[in-house]
Each structure stands twice: as structure tokens, then as C-alpha cells.
Length: 317
Ligand code: B12
Image (cartoon, rainbow, N blue to C red; front, side, top):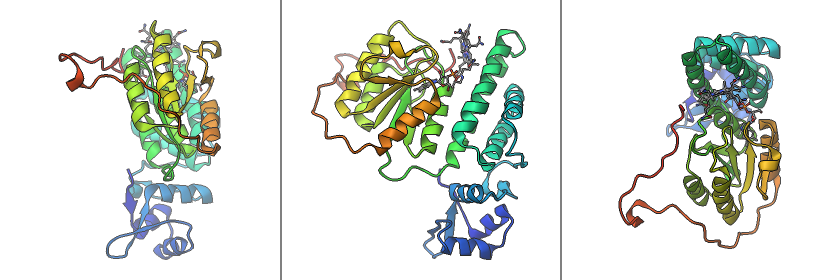
């Protein structure tokens, strides 16, 4: 999404005059596009970036299509976790996004919000499920609203620059855990990496095909459930990654450093993933890799007879 608004709308959102907004545009503090008629149009993420960098509150976030914020960006981490836990249990998507935007405008990074607030709140949900304080439906609904809030947060981030390194993420079949993927995607994007997730439960040959097509600088795999086929699946994707010169990062609760195959980097946390991605972004372009034959999944018309492709595990196991 690259939604744009007029200087008048920006002025309303920030509670300043339209003339100030136009002046900031002319000073290069905002980067408007121009309509065919020559009018300025400012991307939402540019307005949020500007407000955040100046510590300006958003007086009318609704004008930008964002939920009402309440200040409180300086909320202590422990209170933010308490609040996130309650919101997840209540299933209130708007409040979750509002909490995250508040914290973000209070100059927290998305990485910090995800790692220190969302993940801890989720850990509490897990404990609550275990001891019966959280119903299964509450947990599932919480997943849905977290995925939606993370997607919306992604929209207020400055998009990666042209030519930014591409990172792709997925989980293998039998691994329904979509939250680490969505969280990883948004924190990598925040660090300027053009990250995308192919979702949970993707067969290894489908991941390999995606790697061949997207030619990412980084393939990251979240392994929260170790299927018996893990070693073989990893071998398939490692081969594809090697053939396009992609680095491979592995992480997740079902993986340890010693399980990582040679050539892959194991990261314990999303911070480590971001650091690893940043390192790749700075590295000089690798020389074009030699062509290596990689087994690709047969296209439907190449198959001797129609078959059901394994489309992976649906996200709810
Ligand atoms: C949501 C959830 C589910 C959802 C997932 C839905 C979805 N679409 O994502 C569903 C309902 C499917 C589910 C199912 C089950 N779950 Co569950 N689940 C959770 C919960 C509450 C949150 C998990 C989560 O995504 N957290 C957010 C992620 C980001 O955090 P994380 O997993 O801790 O990851 C950290 C690192 O590993 C790292 N990381 C993760 N991936 C990657 C990847 C890379 C590349 C890198 C660098 C880092 C990295 O990032 C995080 C830290 O920075 C946890 C509780 C908890 N403590 O987390 C339980 C939990 C994991 N589940 C648990 C259980 C028991 C189950 C079930 C067996 C329940 C059942 N009887 O059916 C099934 C198993 C399903 C399966 N096939 O494996 C237990 C596991 C206990 C154990 N010791 O193994 C937990 C801990 C709950 C508990 N307290 O008992 N679950």
C-alpha cells in the first residue's frame, strides 16, 4: 500500500497549518509526489516518519486511516506487555494496532515493539492456554489480529529503496507458526530489507522454486515444529539457496545451533536475524554464482499425469 494524502490532510493529521506542510515539503523534510495537475501528494509512511522524527503527536490519525492514538508512547515495557496481553485476549485488532503505533511514535523501533512487547505477550498467552486462563478461540483470534496489526504496521514503514536486498521467509510443512514469519518480515523491512513471507507450511520444493525465482540475498526459515523430514527439507532449500548465492538464516524454538546444516546461520532471536540481514545489505554484491542444476518441482504440464501437489499445512494445525 502506498496511500497518499494532500497537504491539507497532513495539516489536519498533524494539527498544523497547510502552509507549514507545504514549506516542509519544499525544504525536503517530506517527499511529496505530484499529481498530473501538479498538486502535492504525500505518502502516509512519509507523514508518520516525519511525525516520529520530530516527536510530533498525530492529532487526527483517522485522517491518515490510522486508529486514534492516545499518547503514552513512553509506556513502560512491562505495562505495554500487560496491555498487549489483555488486548490479544479480547481480540481487539484496532487497540493492538493503536498500542503499536503509540509505541512507534514514542520512538520505539518496530523490532523493540515486536521483541519486547508482542513476543512476551504471546508467551503469556501460551502460558494462559496451558493453565486454562486463555481459551483456544482466544488464542486463534489473537493470532489473526496480530497478523493484521503487523501487516498494517508494515504499511506505515518507509518502503525499502529500489535495489534493496530481498529476503524471503517461510516455514516447512507441519509447522503452522505464522507469527514468527510475520514478525520477521516487518522487522527486516524496518531495517531496509525488501522482505516477504511465503507463509507457513510450504513444501521444500516450493520454497526452492521461490528462491530460484526471487533470487533473494537472504532466505530465512522459522522452525517452530521439527518434522521428521526437516533434514531432507533443509537439504533441498540449501541447494537452491547456494545456486543463487542466497545466505540462509535459521531460527525458531524447534531449532538449535547444532541442528543447523553447514552453510546456514542459526540466529536465536529476531534481533540477530536483523543484524545478519543488515550485514548482508552492506556486503558487496557477490559474483554471479555458477549455474548449478537444482531440482525444481515439475510444472503441472510436465508431470506425466495430473497429481495433487502438496500445498502445505494450513496455518491452523
Ligand atoms: C500461537 C501458538 C500456537 C498457534 C500457532 C498459530 C499460528 N498460525 O501461528 C497454534 C494454535 C497452531 C499452536 C499449536 C500448538 N501449540 Co502452540 N503456541 C503458540 C504460542 C502461544 C505463540 C507462538 C508464537 O508464534 N510466538 C511468537 C514467536 C515469534 O516467538 P517464539 O516462537 O518464542 O520465537 C522466538 C525465537 O524462536 C525466534 N524465532 C522464531 N522463528 C525464527 C526464525 C528465525 C530465522 C530467527 C532468526 C528467529 C526466530 O524469535 C522469537 C524470539 O525472538 C506459544 C507460546 C509461546 N511461548 O510462544 C505456544 C506454544 C509454542 N505451543 C505449544 C503447544 C504445546 C502447541 C500444540 C502442541 C498444542 C496442541 N496440543 O495442539 C500445537 C502444536 C502445533 C504444531 N503442529 O506444532 C507450547 C509448546 C510447548 C513445548 N515445550 O514445546 C507453547 C510454548 C505453549 C505453552 N506454553 O505450552 N500454537
